[in-house]
Picture 1 (spheres, helix red, strand yellow):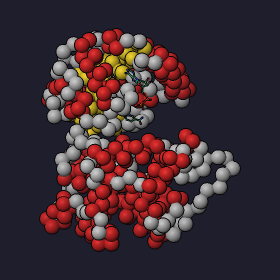
Picture 2 (cartoon, protein in one colour):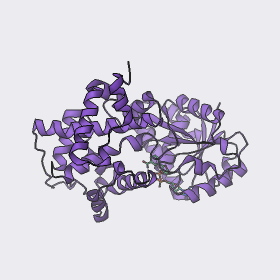
Picture 3 (cartoon, helix red, strand yellow):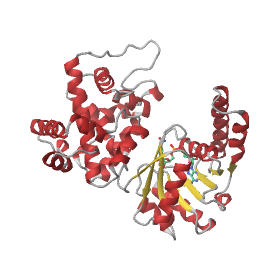
Picture 4 (cartoon, helix red, strand yellow):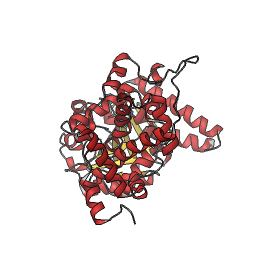
Length: 387
Ligand code: NAI
């Protein structure tokens, strides 16, 4: 039973994870090298909890309980009595490895040492430890207290006990766990790539403007945000970097090729909401392009994007990245897709998925549009993902 949790890094993710663990009743110690970051985390938690009290979601006793469960500490050594530590510091392998080595010299030999990394391999992080079998990826989504999904990623070194305890703990914290193989992007950051990449490609081919593509995806697909709105929300710099990292990590598989459009937007400082301008202009008096609400065009755009997402999800299953249930849960609970992609494939029909991919391939003759072998096999056997 995990009672004492150590969090390293008090930024966006670390402070959110601390709130989740403290709310679930764990005693949490959070460490950061920057005192400012600790002060900011404390202040922001006070604001978040006060808002929850105002809304009647928690009472003041609960607020006090959560706050007293979190201690803000100034040395890594203060985390010595933790049963589980979760690292959420800067995304840099060398720095993470150094911190893990130092941490291991303080904690007990049973303590689980986890990383919240989005893009580094867990095997490489684990290799810095004397006992790499205690290392695991525990990947939360932003904002951690609100997003239900947590990907748990065992490295090849991770022991069964480490994995089991981690999964049980995260479930006890009220989260939905998807177990993912230690491969680039895990589940969500891999399967979601076409949502951005194919939308950018449709724009670059001159098929439609940003507003029309967003309108198509929301009105025909039921997504809460269109791809361009979402990229503006995430930040074009951050989203471009994830795509570039995944592309490189897959040895330049053309399916993940980044877009020049997004690169230029990032270079120009058109980062999205945070810079006031991205694919849309966020100034109060700004005029933005409007959607061309043409049903046939909307359907064509939505179906092209959907089939690329389905193909990516099917391929993730083909490569045993996760189970079909976990792949669908990951996309609905990690990035709020209206439906699981594999369930969506069943609904549209596997024949439709294969035929639509093949039409794209025939048109472009690019490897990007290759149909997953799993979809082809399922078509010939008349199988579905779920019965
Ligand atoms: P952030 O920049 O908000 O916070 C990082 C914190 O770590 C800073 O307060 C910094 O002072 C501290 N730090 C840096 N080096 C340190 C060290 N050696 N020891 C202790 N503290 C140190 O970053 P954010 O966004 O919270 O990301 C943290 C990790 O979580 C990264 O690995 C990132 O890839 C991952 N992640 C981020 C998500 C996001 O949407 N921001 C989502 C899921 C994972």
